[in-house]
Image 1 (cartoon, helix red, strand yellow):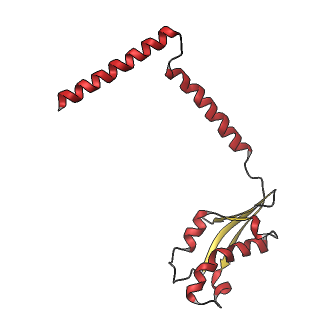
Image 2 (cartoon, one colour; image 1 turned 120 degrees about the horizontal axis):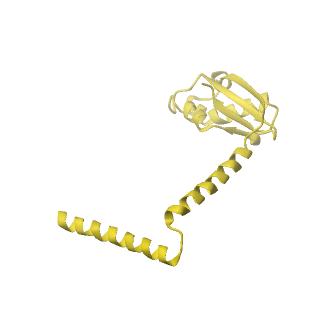
Image 3 (tube, helix red, strand yellow; image 1 turned 135 degrees about the horizontal axis):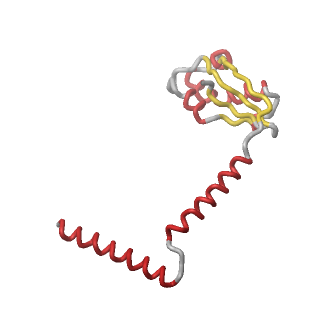
Length: 141
């Protein structure tokens, strides 16, 4: 078994060397030289991402009392209302429509931490608003 594997390995190496020699004879640049160009393109893409950074106008820390907002619902129906309640809270306090409010994935995970039948009483969040009126809800550290 080992001898067959060794033969395959040697054949692969020989094939790679042959390809390199053929590329050099044709005058083409080897694959190694193309990689820095790819890195430069990746650098350009990162630059575009930096340009689209949010310009935060307003940022506040809140403790949302979920228990106060959801005490009138039955225990099984409270779970469905956690997310919309947090969104409505942010929309009200930042004077914007609920369509402009986005919730971070960590907030959703924190809301479902206690399970479906238990309810999270309070939630500490950091809410920020950018120039365009978009509101982002993040978990406070």
